[in-house]
Image (cartoon, rainbow, N blue to C red):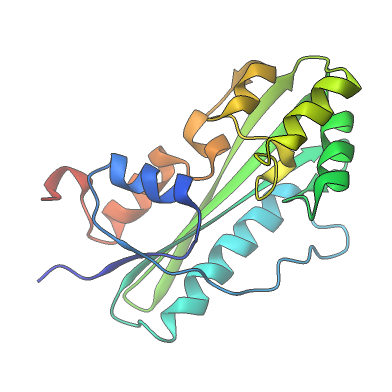
Length: 193
């Protein structure tokens, strides 16, 4: 019998990405403190939060295979998570506009009482954006709930001039790394029903 696969997230993008691999799963959000630690890099923060999400659910579901993931946008030493509101989204987009930033996405898989994790780092360049464009984009509501205040898989793609790295990682779940971690835990996407 295959173990239950749980995605420790409420993100519809992450759920769709797992479904893209043909993996049936249950999405259960993990309620954790996502506050960055002093001096914590985007990569370390993304990995820590991914691990914490997977391990938080492992207490209630110790026999399951649990996938946790988190994305952090970084620019010149500043980390950007999900904007708390429209004003913060505008501030983030203003800072990122016309510049190249890093997107660190951590993924962790809990299975057999152990957690393994990886981090995928991509570089994204957003084109210059006018204040009116930023305001119009924020008004769509899309930036809320997205690291850095934009969704590469949505209208935010209009501003993405260049991507170096993993498209799925920028969306929120690096599929290559996720597949490797799941395979090591005994879940092979190619054998999924």
